[in-house]
Image (tube, rainbow, N blue to C red):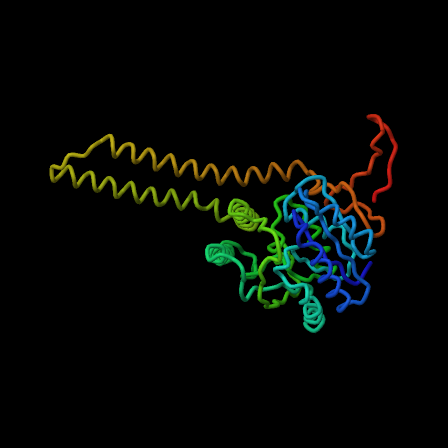
Length: 339
C-alpha cells in the first residue's frame, strides 16, 4: 500500500501527459513526499499516448501505466484505475488539467480536518466552456437532483479525493452502466465539498461531444432513477385529458354546424398516439437493455498490459490478460514478461 494513488483515465491525451506528469508529481510530493503512485489508464488512445506512458513508467518508478484492450469509455477506464490502485487515499482527476492538481494538498488537509471519507470538487466557475455547455450542465445536475432519491452534489464532476474505505465500498458495486459521481454519493460516509475554479483545457479537444454528453446524462438518469418509466402513466393521463377536450370540441363543432375534416383529425390522433407509444417503448427498452447487460456478467474492463510499478493481481471488477509470446502457435503456453 502507498499513502496516495492518483488515478487518471486518458484517451488521446498525448499533448497533455508531460505537463500532467510534472504538475501531479509536484503536488503529490508536496502532499505525501515520495509515498505515492500515479496511475495512468490508456483507454484505447489512437495517438501516441500509450508510448509516452511507457516512457514515463520507465523513467519514474512511481508511474503505473495501464493499457486497456480497447476503448471502454471514461467511466470504465476510471473504474479500472480505481480497481487496480493501491493507495490509502485516492485522487480522481482528468488528464486535461481543467481540474488543478495543485489543489491536492488542500484537499488532503480538508479530509483530515473534517474527518471525511470523500472530498469532492464543486465548480465555482467553468473557464473555456461554451454558454451552451454551461447551460446544459447546469440544467442536467438540477434535473438529476429532482429525479433521484440520492443526494448527488450539484456542479460536481469526478474530481475528488476518497479514502480507501470509501473506495472499497464503491468497488463492491459491479454494475456495467457506471455513473461514478452518483455511485460515490450513494455509498454515504462523510462527504464534504471543496469549491474551486475550473480552468481551460491545457491542450487537445474535449472527449465529450454532445452525443456522448447525452448518452452520459441518460446513463446517470436511468442508473439512479425510475422516473423515466413513470412518464408512461403521465403521458396516458395527458392523452386522456386531450381526448376529452377533443371530444368536446367535436361535439361543439357539430352543434354549431361546422364541418370537421375527418382525415386530418384522425391522422393527428394516430400520429400522436404512435409517437407516445414508441417513446414509452424506447424507455422500457433502455431499462431492459441494462438488465440484459447486467445478466451477462462480463468483466467491466480488460487490461492488455501494465507498465511500471510492482506486479499487480487482477482487480475484482475486471480481467488482467497474460502477455503471450508473439511467436507462439495457437494453443501455445509461452509467455513474455509484462513491461
